[in-house]
Structures are given as structure tokens and as C-alpha cells.
Length: 376
Ligand SMILES: Cc1cc2nc3c(=O)[nH]c(=O)nc-3n(C[C@H](O)[C@H](O)[C@H](O)COP(=O)(O)OP(=O)(O)OC[C@H]3O[C@@H](n4cnc5c(N)ncnc54)[C@H](O)[C@@H]3O)c2cc1C
Figure 1 (cartoon, rainbow, N blue to C red):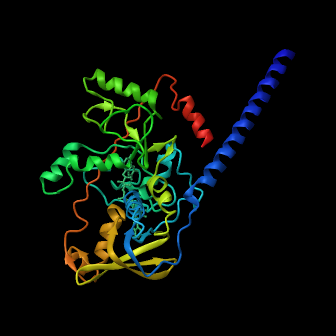
Figure 2: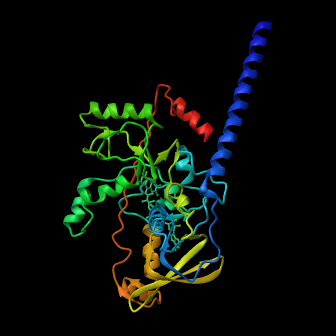
Figure 3: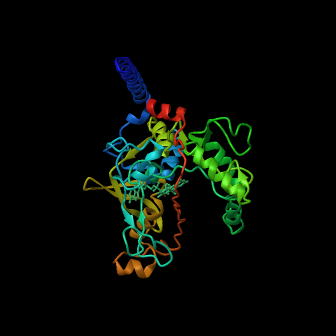
């Protein structure tokens, strides 16, 4: 009895010591990360009156575009975002396992679809409506998404090119995918479909590795092909996908592209700034109007206005600027600049979640991942 008490005390003490050491390492690692991180660069309140490029929306696309355009030190770039900085609130975007929770958190546009006739039958909010999360923060929806790094089918790109979208065949786009990628780990070493040293961290999804392997095995048993690289030669079958994850944490576009670029003097970002209109003169965009904390501001461009406000935001801004279906704009008393079917033909893919019971104990995280979470 006595002996077991001693053992118990000893074990809990040594556990306590390990916990303290881990905590200390964690704090030191976090401080080093924070102090060395360009993420402390703050957004501007007073914008200039003119920039070479004005980019609207700092999501997946806008963050990359602003970073790329500002590589030329002779060009000035303003990036305008309706949401705040990702460092402004306590939301913890980094851990991949929190993705589902984040999709219903703050810094979101909180969109809901209209009642659907062919989907949404299991809708939790009723009336066959879907909740439609979209990020409203620097990084946009790349702060919330499920981080699957799947470039899409090569046949789709080729079909676009065949239908007149010059420059979008798979052969054309592959060099850009490669340029942006920093594939981590050694699984794809030497592959012509992967590249190291780009800005975007890409890892093989190891979070659900054990359950994932069983899923792939089940596919094999059903006669499907096993795929070891969804961005490689064969893309149809069962496999474990790659993720935009670096060292166990979400590799959002704000972290991978925008923050490092914000160290440049020729790139400025305005946050909490809602663009209400593209200003147009003689059918040419000359700048934008936006509202920041209730104050209306106007900026003009020397070269281009780029709309990257997402699948809802961009068409909405176009329509508010008079570019859209004439009838609809007139019903809202918007002066028609160009009668175009803007906002039509939106297609989205559905994700079907298929829960099943696991009747054996299985680890979600490997030991090294659990450790990396602790350290980051
Ligand atoms: C739940 C979910 C999971 C997903 N999972 C994956 C995945 O695993 N893999 C994958 O590849 N893709 C995934 N996607 C899709 C992917 O995240 C999006 O396609 C991508 O983020 C869209 O990028 P974007 O730049 O077009 O728009 P966004 O990233 O949404 O950026 C638009 C930005 O514009 C801003 N904005 C909008 N209106 C205005 C305005 N008027 N003024 C100023 N700023 C404005 C917004 O606040 C936002 O920051 C997922 C999407 C969702 C919703």
C-alpha cells in the first residue's frame, strides 16, 4: 500500500515536471515564432489617393495576387479587405483539426443559401437551406477551409482551353502550381508534379493516417485504383490527399504569401474596409469606393483594379457598379453600365459526410504530430 503510494507520487511528480518542461519549451518556441514573424506588420489606416494596382479582397486569390504584383518594387499595390486582421481576435486558425469549428465562428460572412430543390434535404436550419461559410478576414476562406491541396483534374483544364480559355490548359497552368509549391516531406522527391522552395507549404495528410489507410484499403477491396498522388499522373481512385499544412499548422495564403510580402514598402493593406463600388468612366474602371469605419473613401488606379472578393463578393461589387443583368439592376435603381449575366451559373460541389462507427481504438494523431502541436 505504502509502496504504491510512493510510486503514485513519484509518477505524478515526474509527469508534472515533463508538463512544466513542455510548457516552457512551448512558450519559448511561441515567443521565437512571434518575434521572428512578419505577422506583426499592421494594416494602414490612411491610404494614398492613387496606386498602380488596387486588389479587392484579401482571400486565397487576393493575398497571392497582391504578393506577386508587389514583387516589382516600382509598382505600388493596395489590397482592400472587408474583414479584420487574422491577428486581431482570439480565433485560433492554426490547428487543422479546428477547421470544422472555425467554419461556424466569427470573422465569417454568415451566408445561407436560398431553399434548394435538389440538395440541402438534411439541412440543419430547415427549408432545404445550406449554411455557406465564407471567410471575412485577411486570408479569406483559406482561414477556414479543409486544407485539401488538390489542384483539380487535368482534363477540366484542357476542356477549358479547348472551349476557348487560352492559357488555361493543364500544360499551361502546371508551371504556376509548381512555382507556388513547397512540398514538405520526402514522399514526392523527384516527381515532375511537385516542387520545393515555393511559398505554399504542402504536406501529405497524415492527420487521419490510420483511418485513412483503412479507407484506401476498403477502396482497393472494392476494385478501385489506389492513388498515391492526387496531383500526379492518375487522379481517379482512392488515396490520401495532400494538404496546405506546414509543420502541422494551417498554411493559409495570408501566412504563406501575404505576411512576408507586407514587409515591402510598395504593398499596403487596408482592413475593415468594405468596397461598395468600382468607379467607372467611359466603360473603364478608374478606381474603387470603400467604407472604412463608416468613412467613405475613394482610391484611383494607374494600371488595374482587380476583383478577388470571392464567389459572392466579386459579382456583388460588379452589380453595385452597374455591371450585371439589366432588369435586376434597374429594379434596384442601379445605373446600368453593361448588361451582362453576372452572378449566374454559380456551381458548388457538395461534400457528403458519411459517419460510421469504428469498433477498434485508433489514433488520430501520430506521436510526432502531437508533439509538433505542443511546440507550435
Ligand atoms: C467550408 C469550406 C471548405 C473548403 N475546403 C477546401 C479544401 O479543402 N481545399 C480547397 O482547395 N478548397 C476548399 N474550399 C474552397 C476554397 O477555400 C475557396 O475556393 C477559396 O478560398 C476561394 O478563394 P477566393 O479568393 O476566391 O475567395 P475568399 O478566400 O473567400 O476571399 C474573398 C475575400 O474578399 C473579401 N471581400 C468580399 N467582399 C468584399 C468587399 N465588398 N470589400 C472588401 N473585401 C471583400 C472577403 O472578406 C474575403 O476575405 C473550401 C471552402 C469552404 C467554404
